[in-house]
Amino acid sequence: MLRSAIALLLTAGLQAQAPLADTYRPAADKLMKQATDEGARHAYDALEYLSDDIGHRISGSKELVRAEDWAAEQMKAAGLQNVHFEEAPVPHWVRGAESCELLTQQAGPLDMIGLGGSVGTPKEGLTADVVAVGSFAEFAKLPDSAVKGKIVLFDAPYEGYGRTVMYRYAGASTAAKKGAIACLIRTVGSASLGNPHTGAMAYEAGVPQIPTAALSIEDASRLHRLCAKGETVRVRLKMDAKMLGTTTGRNVIGEIPGSEKPNEIVILSGHLDSWDVGQGAQDDGIGALLSLESARSMIKAGLHPKRTVRVILWTCEEWGGFGAKAYAAAHKAESPNIVAAFESDSGNGRIQGFSVDLHGEESGPGEGKGGSDADRKAVALMDSIAPLLPEGARKMRAGESGEDVGFFIPNGGVGIGVGHDASRYFDVHHSKADAFYHINLDDLRYNLQAYSVMAYVLADMPEKLK
Image (cartoon, rainbow, N blue to C red):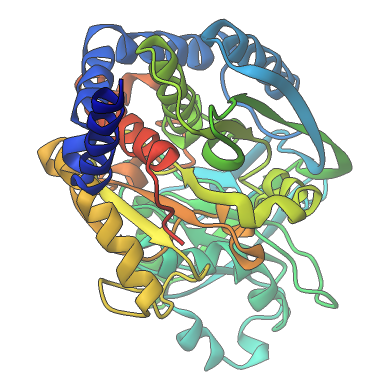
C-alpha cells in the first residue's frame, strides 16, 4: 500500500513537471476528433438555421428575440448548465426605405446604404450638389462657403478597418460643422462590387444632426472623379431612418461548472446581434456558434475542466458593446476571476493564433512578445500550448482581444483574441453579402479544433496566464 502511494505521488510529480503539450495531448486528440467527426458539422448546420430561418438580427428586432430564445435552447441541448438570460438596454433604430439618385451625368440610382443611427431626410428627400474630398485633412482646407447647403462625400480609400472606420463614425458631424445638409462616405470595406457596407455612426453633441449613408466604392469614386473635373454633381438622398429610443436586449449565457475551481472562469463568446442586411453569418453568427460548439465539444469528448467554462452570446455588440458593457458592470466583482475571456468576431477565416490582452489596449505595452514580465509570462504559457493546435494556428502574442471582452480587462480580467485570417472578412462585413454561402465547412472544422483545444487547456491547466 505504501509503495503504491509513493508511486502515485511520483507519477503526479512527474505530470506536474511535464510540458503542457505532453500533459494535454490525450485531451487535445479527443477534441480534434470530436471536431472532425461531428462537432463542426453540428455548428455548420446550426449556423445554416440561424442564417436562413431567422436571418439578420439588429437590436430591437423580433429576429434577435427569436435568435436569443433559440440560442438558449441550443445551449440546453448541448448539455450546458445554468442557462439563462441577462438583460441590457440597447438602442432601437430602424432603417426604413432609402435611396440615392444621381440627377446629372448618367442620371440614375446609386448603390447606397444608410449608416446605423442616422437621422432621416424630409419625406421628399434632400437634393443638393456634391462636394467630394478624399480625406478629413482635405475637407478641413475648404471654406465653409464651399460646403454650406451641399452634400459632402468623403471618398477615403480603405487603409484597414481601424483607420478608415472614422469616416463612417464621424463623417456626418465633421461635414455638418461647415454647414453640409447630408453626408455620404465611400463604403468602409476592402471590396464592395456595387454592395455598400453599413455600420454604426455617431453624432457629436451640439452639432446639427444630418443624414448619412455609404456609397459603393464604384459610385463614390465616380462622383469624386466628376467633381475633380469641375463638373456639377447633383444627387437626391431619401432616407426614412429613425431612432425609436431604447429597448431591451439579452445576453444568452450557459456554462460547464468547474470540477475543482468553479470560481475561476474561462469565457467563450461571440455576439448574436447583426446588422439589418445580409444574414449575419460572418458577423457574428459563426463566432457565436464556434464558441458554443467549443463548449459542447468538451462535453461530447467527456472532458470536465477544473475551471468553469462560460459561454456568453452577446447582445448589441454592433452599437458599441451594449450587452457586454452591462454584463461587465453587473459582474465587476467577478472580473479578477476571469482567467481567460475569448471573443471570436472576425469571421470564419482560419485561426492563425491567439493574443493575450492584459492591458485592454490595441497597442499597449504588451504588443508583440516583448512588453512587461507579465506579458512575456502569458505568451510563454500560450506558446507551451501551441504544439497541440493545428500547425497554422500557433502564433501567440500579447495584444488586443475584442470589443466585448475588453470591458473585463480594466477590472482584472484577461482577454483572449482569436486571430482569424481576416483578409477577406471586410469584403462582406456589414453588407448584404454577409451570408451563409461564404462559410466554409473545412475552415470551420479547423477553427473548432484550434479554439476548443486552447480553451480547454486554459480552463484546466494548473497555472493561470496572470
